[in-house]
Length: 508
Image (cartoon, rainbow, N blue to C red; front, side, top):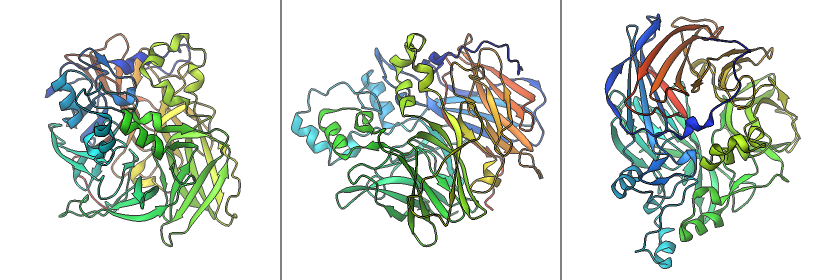
Protein backbone atom coordinates (compact mmCIF):
# COMPACT_ATOMS: atom_id res chain seq x y z
CA UNK A 1 0.00 0.00 0.00
CA UNK A 2 1.14 3.53 -0.68
CA UNK A 3 -0.19 7.05 -0.53
CA UNK A 4 3.12 8.58 -1.54
CA UNK A 5 3.22 11.65 -3.77
CA UNK A 6 6.53 10.43 -5.22
CA UNK A 7 5.07 7.64 -7.35
CA UNK A 8 5.31 7.84 -11.13
CA UNK A 9 2.29 9.60 -12.61
CA UNK A 10 2.29 7.70 -15.92
CA UNK A 11 -0.94 5.83 -16.42
CA UNK A 12 -0.86 2.91 -18.82
CA UNK A 13 -4.10 3.12 -20.82
CA UNK A 14 -3.16 -0.01 -22.79
CA UNK A 15 -4.39 -2.09 -19.84
CA UNK A 16 -7.80 -1.55 -21.48
CA UNK A 17 -6.65 -3.57 -24.49
CA UNK A 18 -6.05 -6.93 -22.85
CA UNK A 19 -7.59 -10.14 -24.14
CA UNK A 20 -8.75 -12.99 -21.93
CA UNK A 21 -8.03 -16.27 -23.71
CA UNK A 22 -9.17 -18.67 -20.99
CA UNK A 23 -12.16 -18.39 -18.69
CA UNK A 24 -11.94 -19.19 -14.98
CA UNK A 25 -14.93 -21.50 -14.52
CA UNK A 26 -13.66 -23.20 -11.36
CA UNK A 27 -13.07 -20.89 -8.39
CA UNK A 28 -9.50 -19.83 -7.69
CA UNK A 29 -8.64 -19.29 -4.04
CA UNK A 30 -6.88 -16.05 -3.26
CA UNK A 31 -3.74 -15.55 -1.23
CA UNK A 32 -4.83 -13.37 1.67
CA UNK A 33 -2.74 -10.58 3.18
CA UNK A 34 -4.15 -8.88 6.25
CA UNK A 35 -7.47 -9.89 7.73
CA UNK A 36 -10.80 -9.58 5.95
CA UNK A 37 -13.55 -8.46 8.37
CA UNK A 38 -15.61 -11.42 9.57
CA UNK A 39 -18.86 -9.55 8.82
CA UNK A 40 -17.95 -9.10 5.15
CA UNK A 41 -19.67 -11.95 3.31
CA UNK A 42 -21.10 -11.86 -0.18
CA UNK A 43 -20.14 -11.62 -3.83
CA UNK A 44 -18.78 -8.70 -5.84
CA UNK A 45 -19.68 -9.20 -9.53
CA UNK A 46 -18.13 -6.95 -12.15
CA UNK A 47 -18.64 -6.44 -15.86
CA UNK A 48 -16.48 -5.10 -18.67
CA UNK A 49 -14.73 -5.83 -21.96
CA UNK A 50 -12.98 -9.21 -21.91
CA UNK A 51 -11.21 -9.01 -25.25
CA UNK A 52 -10.59 -6.47 -27.99
CA UNK A 53 -9.90 -9.16 -30.60
CA UNK A 54 -12.00 -11.74 -32.40
CA UNK A 55 -9.80 -13.89 -34.60
CA UNK A 56 -7.56 -11.54 -36.54
CA UNK A 57 -9.96 -8.60 -36.18
CA UNK A 58 -9.77 -5.95 -33.50
CA UNK A 59 -12.57 -3.87 -32.04
CA UNK A 60 -12.21 -0.15 -32.59
CA UNK A 61 -13.61 1.03 -29.24
CA UNK A 62 -13.18 -0.20 -25.68
CA UNK A 63 -16.98 -0.15 -25.19
CA UNK A 64 -17.25 -2.89 -27.85
CA UNK A 65 -15.17 -5.64 -26.24
CA UNK A 66 -17.02 -8.89 -25.52
CA UNK A 67 -18.59 -8.76 -22.07
CA UNK A 68 -16.59 -10.61 -19.42
CA UNK A 69 -17.98 -11.18 -15.92
CA UNK A 70 -15.78 -11.25 -12.81
CA UNK A 71 -16.83 -12.69 -9.46
CA UNK A 72 -15.14 -12.27 -6.07
CA UNK A 73 -16.90 -14.42 -3.46
CA UNK A 74 -16.06 -13.52 0.15
CA UNK A 75 -16.79 -15.92 2.99
CA UNK A 76 -15.20 -16.49 6.41
CA UNK A 77 -12.13 -14.43 5.63
CA UNK A 78 -11.43 -16.16 2.30
CA UNK A 79 -11.98 -14.99 -1.28
CA UNK A 80 -12.41 -16.93 -4.51
CA UNK A 81 -12.34 -15.60 -8.08
CA UNK A 82 -14.16 -16.70 -11.24
CA UNK A 83 -14.40 -15.14 -14.71
CA UNK A 84 -16.62 -16.00 -17.67
CA UNK A 85 -17.71 -14.44 -20.94
CA UNK A 86 -21.36 -13.41 -21.22
CA UNK A 87 -23.00 -15.87 -23.59
CA UNK A 88 -24.71 -13.22 -25.73
CA UNK A 89 -25.85 -13.75 -29.30
CA UNK A 90 -23.15 -11.32 -30.45
CA UNK A 91 -20.46 -13.31 -28.65
CA UNK A 92 -21.68 -16.64 -30.03
CA UNK A 93 -21.94 -15.36 -33.62
CA UNK A 94 -18.53 -13.71 -33.50
CA UNK A 95 -16.86 -16.78 -32.01
CA UNK A 96 -18.47 -19.06 -34.57
CA UNK A 97 -17.34 -16.87 -37.48
CA UNK A 98 -13.98 -16.07 -35.80
CA UNK A 99 -14.42 -12.46 -36.83
CA UNK A 100 -16.57 -9.45 -35.91
CA UNK A 101 -19.94 -10.00 -37.58
CA UNK A 102 -22.04 -7.81 -35.25
CA UNK A 103 -21.70 -4.02 -35.40
CA UNK A 104 -21.04 -2.44 -32.01
CA UNK A 105 -20.92 1.05 -30.46
CA UNK A 106 -17.76 2.06 -32.31
CA UNK A 107 -16.97 -0.92 -34.54
CA UNK A 108 -18.37 -1.77 -37.95
CA UNK A 109 -18.82 -5.48 -38.63
CA UNK A 110 -17.51 -7.16 -41.74
CA UNK A 111 -20.08 -6.89 -44.58
CA UNK A 112 -22.37 -9.80 -45.24
CA UNK A 113 -22.11 -10.55 -48.99
CA UNK A 114 -25.60 -12.04 -48.93
CA UNK A 115 -27.21 -8.72 -47.91
CA UNK A 116 -28.29 -6.27 -50.62
CA UNK A 117 -29.04 -2.61 -49.92
CA UNK A 118 -32.74 -3.50 -49.80
CA UNK A 119 -32.00 -6.13 -47.16
CA UNK A 120 -30.22 -3.47 -45.09
CA UNK A 121 -33.21 -1.12 -45.36
CA UNK A 122 -35.56 -3.87 -44.16
CA UNK A 123 -33.32 -4.48 -41.16
CA UNK A 124 -34.36 -1.09 -39.75
CA UNK A 125 -37.83 -2.55 -39.18
CA UNK A 126 -36.35 -5.63 -37.47
CA UNK A 127 -33.72 -4.05 -35.20
CA UNK A 128 -33.14 -7.16 -33.10
CA UNK A 129 -31.53 -8.74 -36.15
CA UNK A 130 -28.68 -6.24 -36.23
CA UNK A 131 -28.47 -4.45 -32.85
CA UNK A 132 -25.78 -5.93 -30.63
CA UNK A 133 -26.79 -7.55 -27.36
CA UNK A 134 -23.27 -7.34 -25.90
CA UNK A 135 -24.26 -6.27 -22.37
CA UNK A 136 -20.78 -5.41 -21.14
CA UNK A 137 -21.07 -2.35 -18.89
CA UNK A 138 -22.81 -2.94 -15.57
CA UNK A 139 -24.41 -5.41 -13.13
CA UNK A 140 -27.64 -4.70 -11.25
CA UNK A 141 -30.13 -6.56 -9.09
CA UNK A 142 -33.77 -6.83 -10.12
CA UNK A 143 -35.39 -8.36 -7.07
CA UNK A 144 -33.26 -11.31 -6.04
CA UNK A 145 -31.96 -11.83 -9.59
CA UNK A 146 -28.67 -10.61 -11.08
CA UNK A 147 -28.60 -8.97 -14.52
CA UNK A 148 -25.81 -7.86 -16.86
CA UNK A 149 -26.64 -4.64 -18.71
CA UNK A 150 -25.43 -2.04 -21.14
CA UNK A 151 -27.27 0.72 -23.03
CA UNK A 152 -29.03 -1.56 -25.51
CA UNK A 153 -32.47 -2.89 -24.50
CA UNK A 154 -31.26 -6.44 -23.89
CA UNK A 155 -30.35 -7.74 -20.44
CA UNK A 156 -29.09 -11.13 -19.27
CA UNK A 157 -29.91 -13.00 -16.09
CA UNK A 158 -26.71 -14.30 -14.51
CA UNK A 159 -26.17 -17.17 -12.09
CA UNK A 160 -24.59 -15.41 -9.11
CA UNK A 161 -22.54 -18.46 -8.11
CA UNK A 162 -21.26 -19.80 -11.43
CA UNK A 163 -21.58 -16.67 -13.64
CA UNK A 164 -23.39 -18.78 -16.23
CA UNK A 165 -25.69 -16.87 -18.58
CA UNK A 166 -29.20 -18.06 -17.74
CA UNK A 167 -31.72 -15.98 -19.70
CA UNK A 168 -31.85 -13.23 -22.31
CA UNK A 169 -34.56 -10.57 -22.14
CA UNK A 170 -35.34 -7.73 -24.54
CA UNK A 171 -37.48 -4.66 -23.94
CA UNK A 172 -37.23 -3.36 -27.47
CA UNK A 173 -40.78 -3.95 -28.63
CA UNK A 174 -42.52 -3.22 -25.36
CA UNK A 175 -40.73 -0.31 -23.73
CA UNK A 176 -37.47 1.18 -24.90
CA UNK A 177 -35.01 1.50 -27.76
CA UNK A 178 -32.05 2.18 -25.47
CA UNK A 179 -31.61 2.90 -21.79
CA UNK A 180 -28.96 3.96 -19.29
CA UNK A 181 -26.51 1.42 -17.91
CA UNK A 182 -27.23 2.72 -14.39
CA UNK A 183 -30.81 2.14 -13.22
CA UNK A 184 -31.68 3.14 -9.67
CA UNK A 185 -32.63 0.44 -7.16
CA UNK A 186 -34.99 1.81 -4.51
CA UNK A 187 -35.11 0.72 -0.85
CA UNK A 188 -38.39 -1.17 -1.46
CA UNK A 189 -36.87 -3.08 -4.39
CA UNK A 190 -38.47 -1.09 -7.22
CA UNK A 191 -36.10 -0.22 -10.08
CA UNK A 192 -36.26 2.91 -12.25
CA UNK A 193 -34.42 3.63 -15.48
CA UNK A 194 -34.37 6.32 -18.16
CA UNK A 195 -34.56 5.30 -21.78
CA UNK A 196 -35.55 6.32 -25.28
CA UNK A 197 -38.78 5.07 -26.86
CA UNK A 198 -40.29 5.44 -30.33
CA UNK A 199 -43.62 7.21 -29.78
CA UNK A 200 -45.75 7.93 -32.87
CA UNK A 201 -42.69 8.03 -35.07
CA UNK A 202 -40.62 10.25 -32.76
CA UNK A 203 -37.92 9.27 -30.28
CA UNK A 204 -38.78 10.47 -26.79
CA UNK A 205 -37.25 10.09 -23.35
CA UNK A 206 -39.15 7.75 -21.06
CA UNK A 207 -38.86 6.81 -17.41
CA UNK A 208 -39.54 3.15 -16.81
CA UNK A 209 -40.53 1.55 -13.52
CA UNK A 210 -39.86 -2.12 -12.75
CA UNK A 211 -42.06 -2.81 -9.69
CA UNK A 212 -40.50 -5.12 -7.14
CA UNK A 213 -42.09 -8.52 -6.89
CA UNK A 214 -40.98 -11.67 -5.14
CA UNK A 215 -43.26 -13.77 -7.36
CA UNK A 216 -43.52 -12.08 -10.78
CA UNK A 217 -40.79 -11.29 -13.29
CA UNK A 218 -40.07 -7.58 -12.83
CA UNK A 219 -39.53 -7.15 -16.57
CA UNK A 220 -42.99 -8.52 -17.33
CA UNK A 221 -44.64 -5.88 -15.13
CA UNK A 222 -42.51 -2.91 -16.27
CA UNK A 223 -44.38 0.29 -17.10
CA UNK A 224 -43.56 3.71 -18.53
CA UNK A 225 -44.32 6.28 -15.82
CA UNK A 226 -43.29 9.41 -17.72
CA UNK A 227 -42.79 10.46 -21.35
CA UNK A 228 -40.57 13.50 -21.95
CA UNK A 229 -40.24 15.56 -25.12
CA UNK A 230 -36.55 15.99 -25.89
CA UNK A 231 -35.09 19.43 -26.61
CA UNK A 232 -34.50 18.37 -30.21
CA UNK A 233 -37.54 16.66 -31.75
CA UNK A 234 -35.65 14.07 -33.78
CA UNK A 235 -32.64 13.78 -31.51
CA UNK A 236 -32.86 12.82 -27.83
CA UNK A 237 -29.85 13.43 -25.65
CA UNK A 238 -27.37 10.66 -24.86
CA UNK A 239 -27.61 9.57 -21.21
CA UNK A 240 -25.41 7.06 -19.41
CA UNK A 241 -26.94 7.74 -15.98
CA UNK A 242 -29.53 9.95 -14.27
CA UNK A 243 -30.49 11.26 -10.85
CA UNK A 244 -33.35 10.53 -8.50
CA UNK A 245 -34.60 12.09 -5.25
CA UNK A 246 -37.68 11.57 -3.09
CA UNK A 247 -39.77 13.79 -5.38
CA UNK A 248 -37.86 14.15 -8.65
CA UNK A 249 -36.30 12.30 -11.54
CA UNK A 250 -33.36 14.25 -12.96
CA UNK A 251 -32.32 14.03 -16.61
CA UNK A 252 -29.33 16.03 -17.80
CA UNK A 253 -29.87 17.04 -21.41
CA UNK A 254 -26.33 17.56 -22.65
CA UNK A 255 -25.70 18.56 -26.28
CA UNK A 256 -24.51 15.10 -27.26
CA UNK A 257 -27.54 13.89 -29.17
CA UNK A 258 -28.66 10.65 -30.81
CA UNK A 259 -29.66 11.45 -34.38
CA UNK A 260 -32.78 9.56 -35.51
CA UNK A 261 -31.74 10.02 -39.10
CA UNK A 262 -28.26 8.86 -38.20
CA UNK A 263 -29.66 5.65 -36.71
CA UNK A 264 -31.68 4.98 -39.87
CA UNK A 265 -28.63 5.61 -42.02
CA UNK A 266 -26.53 3.31 -39.83
CA UNK A 267 -28.96 0.45 -40.35
CA UNK A 268 -28.81 0.86 -44.12
CA UNK A 269 -25.04 1.26 -44.57
CA UNK A 270 -23.93 -0.74 -41.50
CA UNK A 271 -22.27 1.98 -39.47
CA UNK A 272 -21.63 1.79 -35.69
CA UNK A 273 -23.92 3.50 -33.18
CA UNK A 274 -21.30 6.15 -32.39
CA UNK A 275 -21.65 7.62 -35.88
CA UNK A 276 -25.22 8.66 -34.97
CA UNK A 277 -23.96 10.79 -32.06
CA UNK A 278 -23.57 14.53 -32.59
CA UNK A 279 -21.84 16.98 -30.23
CA UNK A 280 -23.05 20.60 -30.43
CA UNK A 281 -20.88 22.78 -28.16
CA UNK A 282 -22.82 25.90 -29.13
CA UNK A 283 -25.78 24.62 -27.09
CA UNK A 284 -25.99 24.90 -23.33
CA UNK A 285 -26.59 21.87 -21.15
CA UNK A 286 -30.01 21.71 -19.50
CA UNK A 287 -31.07 19.97 -16.28
CA UNK A 288 -34.62 18.63 -16.38
CA UNK A 289 -36.56 17.97 -13.19
CA UNK A 290 -39.58 15.66 -13.48
CA UNK A 291 -41.87 15.72 -10.46
CA UNK A 292 -42.50 12.10 -9.43
CA UNK A 293 -45.88 13.02 -7.93
CA UNK A 294 -47.41 15.41 -10.46
CA UNK A 295 -45.43 14.65 -13.61
CA UNK A 296 -44.56 18.35 -14.03
CA UNK A 297 -41.38 18.95 -16.03
CA UNK A 298 -39.10 21.96 -15.56
CA UNK A 299 -35.85 22.76 -17.35
CA UNK A 300 -32.95 24.80 -16.05
CA UNK A 301 -29.90 26.04 -17.95
CA UNK A 302 -26.20 25.80 -17.28
CA UNK A 303 -22.97 26.15 -19.22
CA UNK A 304 -22.13 23.41 -21.72
CA UNK A 305 -20.66 20.27 -20.20
CA UNK A 306 -20.56 16.55 -20.85
CA UNK A 307 -21.00 13.79 -18.29
CA UNK A 308 -21.23 10.05 -17.97
CA UNK A 309 -21.98 9.65 -14.26
CA UNK A 310 -24.21 11.39 -11.75
CA UNK A 311 -22.55 11.05 -8.34
CA UNK A 312 -25.71 11.64 -6.31
CA UNK A 313 -28.70 13.97 -6.11
CA UNK A 314 -30.91 15.07 -3.23
CA UNK A 315 -33.37 17.65 -1.90
CA UNK A 316 -32.71 20.01 1.02
CA UNK A 317 -33.47 23.59 2.05
CA UNK A 318 -35.87 24.17 -0.80
CA UNK A 319 -33.53 23.12 -3.57
CA UNK A 320 -32.44 20.10 -5.59
CA UNK A 321 -28.72 19.34 -5.62
CA UNK A 322 -27.12 17.34 -8.43
CA UNK A 323 -23.47 16.23 -8.22
CA UNK A 324 -21.82 15.16 -11.47
CA UNK A 325 -18.44 14.07 -12.85
CA UNK A 326 -18.22 16.82 -15.45
CA UNK A 327 -16.16 17.26 -18.65
CA UNK A 328 -15.82 20.33 -20.86
CA UNK A 329 -16.75 18.26 -23.92
CA UNK A 330 -17.41 14.70 -25.09
CA UNK A 331 -13.80 13.91 -26.04
CA UNK A 332 -13.61 11.22 -23.33
CA UNK A 333 -15.55 8.98 -25.75
CA UNK A 334 -12.90 9.59 -28.41
CA UNK A 335 -10.22 8.80 -25.82
CA UNK A 336 -11.57 5.25 -25.52
CA UNK A 337 -11.03 4.36 -29.17
CA UNK A 338 -8.39 1.67 -29.45
CA UNK A 339 -6.22 3.67 -31.84
CA UNK A 340 -6.41 6.70 -29.54
CA UNK A 341 -5.23 4.58 -26.61
CA UNK A 342 -2.35 3.15 -28.63
CA UNK A 343 -1.27 6.66 -29.61
CA UNK A 344 -1.94 8.39 -26.29
CA UNK A 345 1.76 8.98 -25.60
CA UNK A 346 2.17 11.02 -28.78
CA UNK A 347 -1.13 12.88 -28.58
CA UNK A 348 -0.59 16.16 -26.70
CA UNK A 349 -4.35 16.58 -26.22
CA UNK A 350 -5.08 13.13 -24.82
CA UNK A 351 -4.70 14.12 -21.18
CA UNK A 352 -7.16 16.98 -21.64
CA UNK A 353 -9.71 14.60 -23.16
CA UNK A 354 -9.70 12.63 -19.89
CA UNK A 355 -9.95 15.65 -17.60
CA UNK A 356 -13.07 15.57 -15.43
CA UNK A 357 -14.07 17.49 -12.31
CA UNK A 358 -16.74 16.78 -9.66
CA UNK A 359 -19.22 19.64 -9.75
CA UNK A 360 -22.37 20.51 -7.79
CA UNK A 361 -25.47 22.10 -9.31
CA UNK A 362 -27.94 23.62 -6.82
CA UNK A 363 -31.40 24.39 -8.22
CA UNK A 364 -33.84 26.42 -6.09
CA UNK A 365 -37.27 24.88 -6.45
CA UNK A 366 -38.84 28.35 -6.58
CA UNK A 367 -36.61 29.40 -9.49
CA UNK A 368 -38.32 30.21 -12.77
CA UNK A 369 -38.00 27.71 -15.63
CA UNK A 370 -34.80 28.09 -17.66
CA UNK A 371 -33.04 29.92 -14.84
CA UNK A 372 -29.30 29.58 -15.31
CA UNK A 373 -27.56 27.49 -12.65
CA UNK A 374 -23.88 28.04 -11.88
CA UNK A 375 -21.96 24.92 -10.78
CA UNK A 376 -19.64 24.73 -7.81
CA UNK A 377 -16.41 22.72 -7.83
CA UNK A 378 -16.42 20.06 -5.10
CA UNK A 379 -12.70 19.32 -5.42
CA UNK A 380 -10.04 20.23 -7.96
CA UNK A 381 -9.22 16.67 -8.90
CA UNK A 382 -10.09 14.32 -11.75
CA UNK A 383 -12.40 11.54 -10.67
CA UNK A 384 -14.59 8.98 -12.41
CA UNK A 385 -16.69 5.86 -11.70
CA UNK A 386 -18.15 7.52 -8.56
CA UNK A 387 -19.73 5.45 -5.81
CA UNK A 388 -21.44 6.39 -2.54
CA UNK A 389 -22.95 4.64 0.45
CA UNK A 390 -25.80 3.81 -1.93
CA UNK A 391 -28.15 1.82 0.27
CA UNK A 392 -28.47 4.59 2.86
CA UNK A 393 -27.76 7.81 0.95
CA UNK A 394 -28.88 7.44 -2.66
CA UNK A 395 -31.18 10.38 -3.42
CA UNK A 396 -30.56 11.85 0.04
CA UNK A 397 -28.22 14.45 1.55
CA UNK A 398 -24.79 12.85 1.82
CA UNK A 399 -21.17 13.76 2.48
CA UNK A 400 -18.71 11.28 0.95
CA UNK A 401 -18.12 9.78 -2.47
CA UNK A 402 -15.40 7.55 -3.87
CA UNK A 403 -13.92 7.08 -7.31
CA UNK A 404 -10.77 6.49 -9.34
CA UNK A 405 -8.33 9.11 -10.62
CA UNK A 406 -9.31 9.90 -14.20
CA UNK A 407 -6.57 12.26 -15.34
CA UNK A 408 -3.87 10.07 -16.84
CA UNK A 409 -1.19 12.76 -16.57
CA UNK A 410 -1.99 13.79 -12.99
CA UNK A 411 -0.15 12.77 -9.85
CA UNK A 412 -3.24 10.88 -8.64
CA UNK A 413 -3.80 8.98 -11.90
CA UNK A 414 -5.04 5.49 -11.05
CA UNK A 415 -5.66 6.34 -7.40
CA UNK A 416 -8.67 5.40 -5.36
CA UNK A 417 -10.07 8.74 -4.22
CA UNK A 418 -12.37 9.78 -1.39
CA UNK A 419 -13.91 13.26 -1.47
CA UNK A 420 -15.72 15.05 1.34
CA UNK A 421 -18.45 16.94 -0.51
CA UNK A 422 -18.88 19.32 2.46
CA UNK A 423 -15.28 20.34 3.12
CA UNK A 424 -13.62 19.41 -0.18
CA UNK A 425 -11.05 17.26 1.63
CA UNK A 426 -9.45 14.62 -0.59
CA UNK A 427 -7.91 11.30 0.47
CA UNK A 428 -6.16 8.92 -1.92
CA UNK A 429 -4.83 5.36 -2.07
CA UNK A 430 -2.36 4.32 -4.72
CA UNK A 431 0.13 1.57 -5.40
CA UNK A 432 2.81 1.59 -8.08
CA UNK A 433 1.83 -0.28 -11.25
CA UNK A 434 -1.68 -0.90 -9.91
CA UNK A 435 -4.86 -0.01 -11.80
CA UNK A 436 -7.94 -0.16 -9.55
CA UNK A 437 -11.54 -0.44 -10.60
CA UNK A 438 -14.33 1.63 -9.05
CA UNK A 439 -14.42 1.47 -5.27
CA UNK A 440 -17.65 -0.19 -4.08
CA UNK A 441 -18.80 0.79 -0.57
CA UNK A 442 -20.18 -1.81 1.86
CA UNK A 443 -21.42 -0.57 5.22
CA UNK A 444 -20.37 -2.27 8.42
CA UNK A 445 -23.42 -3.87 10.13
CA UNK A 446 -24.81 -1.45 12.69
CA UNK A 447 -22.83 1.47 11.30
CA UNK A 448 -24.04 4.95 12.27
CA UNK A 449 -21.52 7.04 10.36
CA UNK A 450 -21.87 7.43 6.59
CA UNK A 451 -18.34 6.19 5.89
CA UNK A 452 -18.22 3.39 8.46
CA UNK A 453 -17.52 0.45 6.19
CA UNK A 454 -15.12 -0.85 3.59
CA UNK A 455 -14.33 -0.24 -0.05
CA UNK A 456 -13.81 -3.13 -2.45
CA UNK A 457 -11.78 -2.60 -5.62
CA UNK A 458 -10.44 -5.06 -8.19
CA UNK A 459 -6.86 -4.05 -9.00
CA UNK A 460 -5.01 -5.24 -12.08
CA UNK A 461 -1.28 -4.80 -12.61
CA UNK A 462 0.75 -3.33 -15.43
CA UNK A 463 3.71 -5.69 -15.48
CA UNK A 464 1.75 -8.76 -14.35
CA UNK A 465 -1.02 -9.07 -16.92
CA UNK A 466 -2.29 -12.41 -15.58
CA UNK A 467 -3.02 -11.28 -12.03
CA UNK A 468 -5.78 -9.51 -10.14
CA UNK A 469 -6.12 -8.37 -6.54
CA UNK A 470 -9.28 -7.74 -4.55
CA UNK A 471 -8.44 -4.81 -2.30
CA UNK A 472 -10.27 -4.13 0.97
CA UNK A 473 -9.86 -0.56 2.29
CA UNK A 474 -11.23 1.17 5.36
CA UNK A 475 -13.64 3.70 3.83
CA UNK A 476 -12.88 6.25 6.55
CA UNK A 477 -9.18 6.80 5.83
CA UNK A 478 -8.44 4.50 2.83
CA UNK A 479 -6.14 2.39 4.99
CA UNK A 480 -5.59 -1.06 3.55
CA UNK A 481 -7.25 -3.74 5.68
CA UNK A 482 -6.63 -6.76 3.50
CA UNK A 483 -6.15 -8.02 -0.03
CA UNK A 484 -6.63 -11.25 -1.92
CA UNK A 485 -4.15 -11.94 -4.74
CA UNK A 486 -4.96 -14.21 -7.69
CA UNK A 487 -2.94 -15.56 -10.60
CA UNK A 488 -5.11 -16.16 -13.67
CA UNK A 489 -4.47 -18.47 -16.65
CA UNK A 490 -4.50 -15.61 -19.17
CA UNK A 491 -4.55 -11.84 -19.33
CA UNK A 492 -6.74 -10.06 -16.80
CA UNK A 493 -8.80 -7.34 -18.52
CA UNK A 494 -10.09 -4.15 -16.94
CA UNK A 495 -13.79 -3.77 -16.18
CA UNK A 496 -16.32 -0.98 -15.89
CA UNK A 497 -18.95 -1.43 -13.17
CA UNK A 498 -20.16 -3.93 -10.63
CA UNK A 499 -22.45 -4.62 -7.67
CA UNK A 500 -21.95 -6.26 -4.29
CA UNK A 501 -24.49 -8.92 -3.39
CA UNK A 502 -24.48 -9.74 0.34
CA UNK A 503 -25.18 -13.33 1.25
CA UNK A 504 -28.49 -12.24 2.71
CA UNK A 505 -30.21 -9.68 0.51
CA UNK A 506 -33.11 -7.85 2.16
CA UNK A 507 -35.68 -5.39 0.83
CA UNK A 508 -36.48 -2.57 3.22
